[in-house]
Image 1 (tube, rainbow, N blue to C red):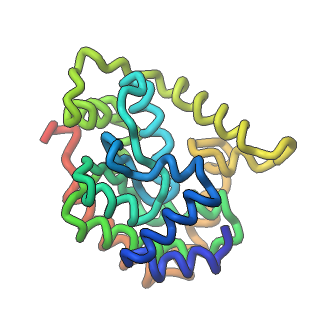
Image 2: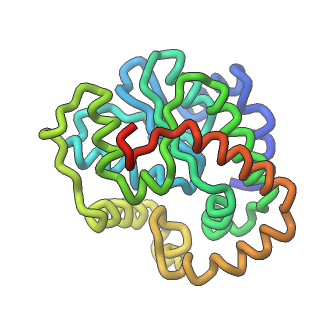
Length: 242
């Protein structure tokens, strides 16, 4: 998706009319993604801004609970959060440090500029913060304390702890890789940069991009960092079991 699309999307995605238009468009043009939208039959929403371990946490949750729940996920749009509130569905939103999000997304979509990503980040989490129906999950907890996060979400849905069988990290990565390969055009050479998990190529390119973004987007990055700290303070401390 191009810069123009994301710019237009960010400008209107806080409006109710946008929520209806976007979901209607998904129903017609991307029916598989539409099935991931929150509805009356959804059990839980697990969402977040792109490149925030959404894929990892959703697959870990599904594997651990035996796919016993209908999970709404991966719209990366405020309409998902709004519909969770509308239907009274538990909503968990992952929050990751903005600079890391920007770098990860730029590695996947090099044509997307950091200003657009940061503006969207700020808009998205302001909406989530003001929605009143969101439980926030820190990215580091989602990726490093996955078992505790999955258990907390599952238990909130009435799933007993002894029924949860956590998969190994590599098992989740394998599922992500398999799905990614099925979607990619044969022969594409940017798999390591675009796959939704850590990779050697990403690590080797991060530092150069971080320096560039920090210099060119200082004001927006500071605003995003302030918002990140505010939202993070709302997240439950997994380590202390709060």
